[in-house]
Image 1 (cartoon, rainbow, N blue to C red):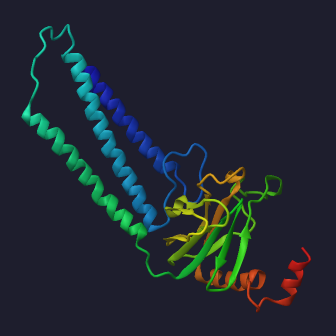
Image 2: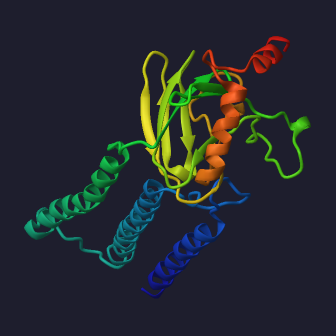
Amino acid sequence: MLVLKRLVAFIIVGVTSLSTGAAFAATAGRPEPWQLGLQKGVTPVMDDIIWFHDFLLWVITAITLFVLALLVIVVVKFNARANPTPSRTTHNTAIEVLWTVVPVLILVTIAIPSFRLLFFQLNMPKADVTVKATGKQWFWTYSYPDDKFEFDSLMVQEKDLKQGQLRLLTVDNEMVVPVNKVVHVLTIGADVIHAFAVPSFGIKIDSIPGRINETWFKAEREGTYYGQCSELCGKDHAFMPIVVRVVNDREYTAWIEQAKKKFATDGSRPAAVAAADGTR
């Protein structure tokens, strides 16, 4: 039994270390080398996802240790040398009731927060900003229907990266949204199925040709947050980064005014900008 106690203690210490390491390694906005666990959340949805993930980790760990303990007890106590005359018991009502009721209670315990989280993700609150993200082979197009402009967002090639920019994650035109505002994301695929995913926001939804899907997020901290297409979509699937820059209201208003001049899609577009685009 001393071996069993030491084994259980070792596993508990290992799981605790992994959980602590994950908490320290996780960074908001982007992946880090040797990172354990999920990226740090910056939205209420992602905070709930992280809590549920950690809750399930402990539930699964407890179940695994319990089953391991039973296996060790059986191996040590009921082997042929220790128990030369085996029992011929075939039924035990109490045990049979327990192994039916206890798993049901565990599943109910998991299901309640699971359904609550699912409802939170799918229940769309009133939007402050709407952005349409169109997945194409192999880049994203962002449309701001309320302000009547759209633009393409392509990955910056490694040879063109500047100091501090991330390889495979930097784009030429970032999606910009205001902090502490509900952003309604509409997404669709223009050719094949893509997936719009930003881990720090807790969002991942398929972009399907001919069908508009929707999701939402409310970023509570300013910063730059990275994601990628998360559905195999062809040879350059790995080169479809998503970059969302979260700014304060003043910076967002200034960016909108600049973007209207640079990317406007209606008749109010400045002639100089249209002429410049025509020469490209």
